[in-house]
Length: 174
Ligand SMILES: Cc1cc2nc3c(=O)[nH]c(=O)nc-3n(C[C@H](O)[C@H](O)[C@H](O)COP(=O)(O)O)c2cc1C
Image 1 (cartoon, protein in one colour):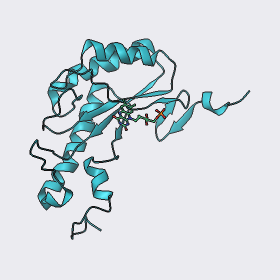
Image 2 (cartoon, protein in one colour):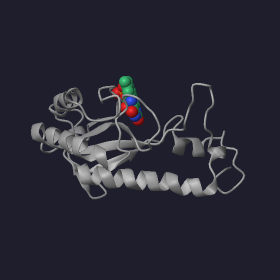
Image 3 (cartoon, protein in one colour):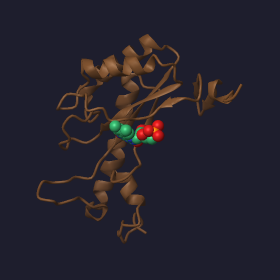
């Protein structure tokens, strides 16, 4: 039989995954406009968790208070109860599956065309970025998630620090 390993457990750090299939993070547009978990969002994750994967990553959740309509949020404690309910629902249909949430801080954009760049952050604001990720992770743990995934792609803040377009002249550039 092919793909034998795919269906065997794997341990990553302290977490044991029942198999190696992961449903990756995919923004659904099903959260409420202000970022809360909705019944539609829960129904979607219940359906997908039933498939029997080893892990599921709940879609990119915003960790700062800037506007981002219909994006799931984990930017303050008021979002924890909804996320807790989501985790409970996923576990109900698949008690084995490990559940993560992807956390992301985006660079700000305005309608005028202005785009925030990594060069715009003052040094003290860099500590805020760290704190935002730490606080979001604490909320994820309180909501019952097994792990967090940090969004490091395209224009999100951490990817932008790693990009060649980062022209900072301090130790956060180059
Ligand atoms: C509608 C949609 C939304 C997505 N949203 C995210 C996201 O929030 N975070 C992320 O890291 N990847 C996101 N992706 C990428 C997927 O997680 C996945 O890596 C990509 O679709 C490649 O896998 P595939 O070849 O199985 O489609 C998204 C993809 C789609 C189609």
